[in-house]
Image (cartoon, rainbow, N blue to C red):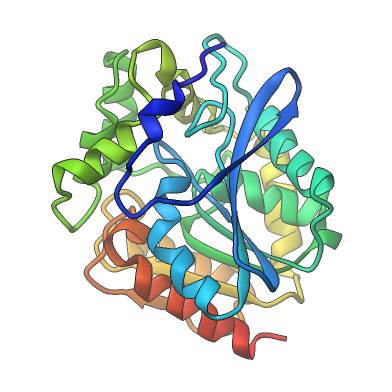
Length: 293
């Protein structure tokens, strides 16, 4: 088990949020908890952490919401198993435990990247009664039938061949914005060594690519539940995502799920759209929540 030294998180740009910690399954897990009002849980993907949400949180808090952004096991300030601990089910269980321990209800769940496969399962087949609204951005569910594009295959091959992942480079490459060194350092802060990067290296291999692979059946159950869901669902998508392209993936999601309004295209944004256009995203979600019932 690896725990990133606390000093790695000192003086991060635009990230003065106070961390909160809880114990789960022998690990210390971290989350940030800002603001008061109706609760929004923001779930990151790979290889990011709650730092991804810093630009989104401010407009949401200003609009009168409470924002909770957990660091999944293996990411951010949370402890990082260094072996084969990582499974789809364990990551899901860690999120469910957050909702139960904090007794969260009437939640708006916001998911990005790997936050979708984890969070959308929680929102449908695990703790649906605790989640009242869902916002999805550049994410989805794994069913074993989905086709992974060339950009994703290249990403997977790169991870397999690179034990010491360049976290900041990966985030920067999937943004439209050319990130300054201090922001790249913020994404790299939790991962000072090869040992600390087991989570980012492990998750891509968990994607079920055949219908009988682990997690595929559960993914299909979550998709089936979402297709008839009556809760408000907001869909946002970057206009320049090369990993999950707008027209091939975002529009398919729009057709598949009963979204409460047409897909919002986030302009001048890549796959890590909260980094490129976080303020716009926060304002868009806040506006939607003012209308969602």
